[in-house]
Length: 400
Ligand SMILES: *[C@@H]1O[C@H](CO)[C@@H](O)[C@H](O)[C@H]1NC(C)=O
Ligand SMILES: *[C@@H]1O[C@H](CO)[C@@H](O)[C@H](O)[C@H]1NC(C)=O
Ligand SMILES: *[C@@H]1O[C@H](CO)[C@@H](O)[C@H](O)[C@H]1NC(C)=O
Ligand SMILES: *[C@@H]1O[C@H](CO)[C@@H](O)[C@H](O)[C@H]1NC(C)=O
Ligand SMILES: *[C@@H]1O[C@H](CO)[C@@H](O)[C@H](O)[C@H]1NC(C)=O
Ligand SMILES: *[C@@H]1O[C@H](CO)[C@@H](O)[C@H](O)[C@H]1NC(C)=O
Ligand SMILES: *[C@@H]1O[C@H](CO)[C@@H](O)[C@H](O)[C@H]1NC(C)=O
Image (cartoon, rainbow, N blue to C red):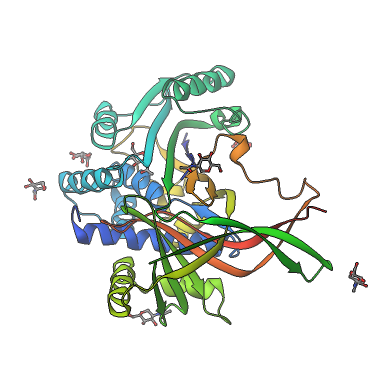
C-alpha cells in the first residue's frame, strides 16, 4: 500500500553566497509566482516562493530515480549534496541575518511509517527541521499533540483549530509544516489619506486608504516589462518591496509573463543606474494600504513547472527517505499579509490582523482596482524573493 505525504505550509505574518545559485533560486521563484497567479486566474494572491523552494529542495536529495532527475532539473541541483547544503545554508543565513524574518520547519510522522534514521538526521542537521513521531491513527490525540508542539515553539496557534484539522491525519503518514513570519518597517513612513473612489457600477462613492510618501525613491520605467518599478525600502535597507505597476493599457498577466524574462538583479541594477543618472529627485509614491489572506494549492503550478512524479502515486520515488512507498498528496500554502503606513507584517494567526471578511460586512465593497499592481519583497543582497503577490481588488469603505 502506498501512503500519502501531506505538506502544509503556513506562513505567519511577512552579497553573500554564490550568485549563480542565488539567481537560480530567484528564477524558480519568479516562475512559481507566475504559475500560481496563472492558476488563480490573475486574482489577488500572495505567496512565499522562497519558503516553497527551501522546503522542496530540503526533500530533493531524498529522491531517487526519475523523481530525482525531475527535481534536479527543475531546481538545477548539483549532484554533490554537501555543496548544495553549503549554498543553502549561506542563503538561509543571509535571509535570516536581520531579525525581520523568522521561520520554523516541522516534520510530523506516523509511528508506523518507516523513515531511514539517517534521513531524519539529514533533515534535522542540514535543514533545521524539528521532527516528531506519533500515532496518526489516533487522529484526535494527534491533532492535540501537534498543536502542543507548535505552541512549545511559541508559534501562536489561536484560530488555527479549523486549519490544523483532524482530517490532515486521515490517510497521511507524514505532514510537513513550515511557519514563517516577516515584520518590517518602512524606511520612509507613509501618511494615510482617506480617499474617495467613484464606484461606477453602484452609483456610489466609497473610500479607501491611500498611503502617500515623499522621498528619494528609486523608480524606473521598464519597456521590456511594460511597467514602472518603484523600490520601497525597509529600515536597514536589507529588504525592499518592488512595486510594479503596468503601463496603461497593459494587463497584470502580461507583466507577470514579462517578469520571467528579466532577472531581479537587472531590475535592481537599472533602478540604481537611473537614480544615479537623474540625481535622485524627490518623488511622491502613493499606494493603497492593503491586506490579503490567501490559501493556495501548489500542486498544479508545480506540476506545470515539471514536477510531476513526486505527486504521482505510482512513480514517486522517495526511496532514499523511506522503505515505504510515499508520494506527496498536497502542497498547500497559506499567507496573510498586512501592508500599512508604517510597516509590512505577514502573519496567519491573529484574527484581528486578518482582512475584513470581504462579503460579511455591509460597509465594505470589493471592486476591481483600476490601479492593479504586483509587489515583490526581496532580500537585496541575494535577490531572494521572500514574498510575491498581486493587488487587483480594492476594498471600498462606505462610512455613510
Ligand atoms: C522553512 O523551514 C526551513 C527548515 O527549517 C528553513 O530553512 C526555511 O528557511 C523555512 N522557511 C523559509 C521561509 O525559509
Ligand atoms: C562536494 O562538495 C564539497 C563541498 O563543496 C567538496 O568539499 C567536495 O570535494 C565535493 N565532492 C565531490 C565529489 O566533488
Ligand atoms: C482516505 O482514503 C479513502 C480511500 O482512498 C478515501 O475514500 C477518503 O476520501 C480519504 N479521506 C480523506 C480525508 O482524504
Ligand atoms: C445616482 O445617485 C444620485 C444621488 O443619489 C441620483 O441623483 C442619481 O439619479 C443616481 N443615478 C443613477 C444612474 O442611479
Ligand atoms: C524571452 O526571451 C526569450 C529569449 O531570450 C525570447 O525567445 C522570448 O520571446 C522572450 N519572451 C518574452 C515574453 O518576451
Ligand atoms: C541517500 O542520500 C545520501 C545523502 O545524500 C547519500 O549519501 C546516499 O548515497 C543516498 N542513498 C542512495 C541509495 O542513493
Ligand atoms: C505602526 O502603526 C501601528 C498602528 O497601526 C502602531 O501600533 C505602531 O506602534 C506603529 N509603529 C511605529 C513604529 O510607529
